[in-house]
Length: 272
Ligand code: BJW
Ligand code: ZN
Image (cartoon, rainbow, N blue to C red; front, side, top):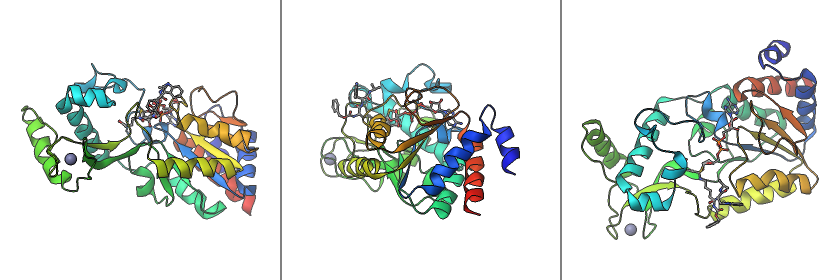
């Protein structure tokens, strides 16, 4: 099984998978960090992929800012509504599932994700820390009050979008300002508790498995450096070169949905 999967995981050296598996099996405090790449094989485009359809003329970087929301709240809201609809239609992939099963093999570990989707949770991972918020959450742009009634209202707005009429975000019941998605936009602070937990986990971890991120967005991109400076090792999984390549202890070049099941098998072999 392992040999077959490794053969499928093109370009990856069997030795590197075994070495990474040995590190993980021996680790006392592992940490996993994920980016958009892990959800790509579920059909969620990565952040820096070209957008398609209605959104092809916009760059995500130009929609994911407080300024964009203030300038055109309807446009930004509709983009997030579309992404919510897309997320409801997709399923966790082999990469998400392998990470959930890895916890059964090496013991529970924190899983820090930059993703706003819920695919890790749906795959069964338990200690998920969302650095950049969650797509299904909403709160007031002005008074920050959480909005729990968003879902129904949102469905109405979806219908409005489908029929071509202008959909605007719902209004806050407390102050009347627009409701926004509970995600972290450029220039905004990360949720303090999530960042503190991620930073502390990086400082004490002995192996970081870093999957599917371009390592371009800070402060998340600082986490591998924190691990290395504290004496830990970093295993990266990515089909493309990234900003982390030269510092990673091992680079497993390939798709998460292929590499992670092979890595899980190799960890199982270590344990038997
Ligand atoms: C596969 C695969 C497969 C494909 N398997 N892999 C200089 C230093 C430090 C900070 C800054 C700086 N200059 C500017 C900043 C600030 C800024 C920043 O980092 N900018 C950089 C672009 C330079 N950061 C911030 O603003 C952050 N806040 C902050 O710093 O607060 C302090 C502050 C306050 C005020 C002023 C200044 C500072 C907040 C960052 C929030 C990021 N938010 C987003 C949007 C979330 C909501 C939404 O989804 O709409 O988060 S941006 C976007 O990028 C999203 C992602 O979580 C994040 C990271 O992207 P990720 O996951 O790496 O995705 P991609 O697309 O980049 O890469 C995908 C990877 O997958 C690729 O490598 C593929 O090869 C790979 N892949 N298929 C495995 N099958
Ligand atoms: Zn409000």
